[in-house]
Image (cartoon, rainbow, N blue to C red; front, side):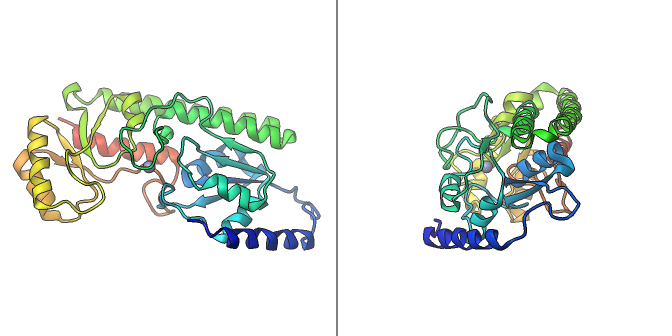
Length: 303
Ligand SMILES: [Zn+2]
């Protein structure tokens, strides 16, 4: 939970600093539009549309989970500092409304999923009914980009042409990415387009591209599975003829080997869902994240 008093203190402290700070644009470089994005994937989309006219700050960084994020006092300052705030919505950042209030920010808040056809979450893991992971469909990411473009133009009309040009170029890349994923999926035999996964984040991906993500039955996705859980998974994999398993919460290599040996299923690599990786990882951008996941699925599901 947020320590509200701490946030308020931080925001108040910032107000004093803001008065003392020199006015923006005193030097010759034009002041950049300060944009706050709630998490790393969204931050990447905003950077692609904003280009060098914007300075993007993110709250939930790479490799971090926005679902369980607890804002720090410094985050209220980041929000107060921004001329435009961009969030995912669909219940992804349950802590955000309170943080914006505590910051005292009057900046416009864009919900980047505006206009997206939302799907219901298949579980009740704090997603409040809607599945927030809309970016897992590239077509949805294009809606985010259009919303971001329009919000940047509204906040900084002088940059209209730049934002439009950046968005058009990036939308072209997303079209190519969407096509790439479709081609990769079509190369997988239709009866092999399913995996067991403990992630509940790929519903939009499944809907868009037709690879089925099946939750392991009766297995907690939180804890390290027991020997009995593994036996259940083995039964399920055999019964449903699932060609590959992506079970990142099984850290015991012997259990994974047992599943592979007894079912013949392949053990998939890491799939990224809610965050980019740091600079040295496999998913430093949204496009790389989708590409990485598709590669893992292709390798695991090829006949
Ligand atoms: Zn998630």
